[in-house]
Length: 238
Image 1: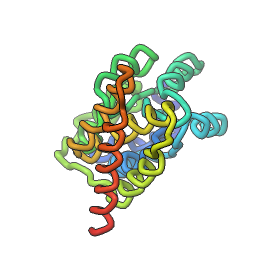
Image 2: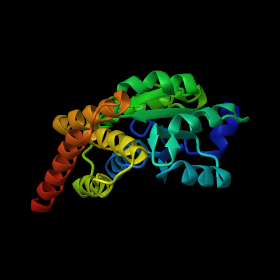
Image 3: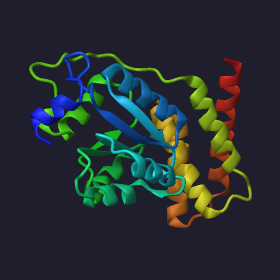
């Protein structure tokens, strides 16, 4: 699509709403991170659609074509890197494919799979989010002239954070299998990074590392489960 065709079909982006005219599909299983993304898109002028797993994302993509896809790498039914690779091979290609994760080490995996960029959690800075998206899309989708830079930081709904903690608590049972523990460790790490919760991030990372190294995990699992329960109690008190 050339610049004239794009301009005739979509509202033009502006300096204050630089993503106006874009539709962003966010593939994210964390409600807290997804609410952050919703606010970032809203402030930027973009429309947002959401999917919480690979299956849901693929179903969305059969129906419509977004301008941008932002994919979390750790999803309940597989790796977001697989979807990134699939989309990077499709012609015509989606204008921008971005990855996001609470583990900065995943950036190399995302770029290798075909992502155009990487968003490290927490997703809080409006200007950083806008810059990441704009640097990935074709030039004709960017606002003309200078763009207003803001230091605004968004604050997702804490109820969404509690929902994520409740979801994690359901999985952190004594009879959880290894696949579930691997998923919940990366899930909690991503949510904790989004919430700037360093203690919870470290506990989730420790469990993930113990699992990867084949070490005994019972104490690490119990530690993470206890912290998750504490967060639920704290949020209920608020």
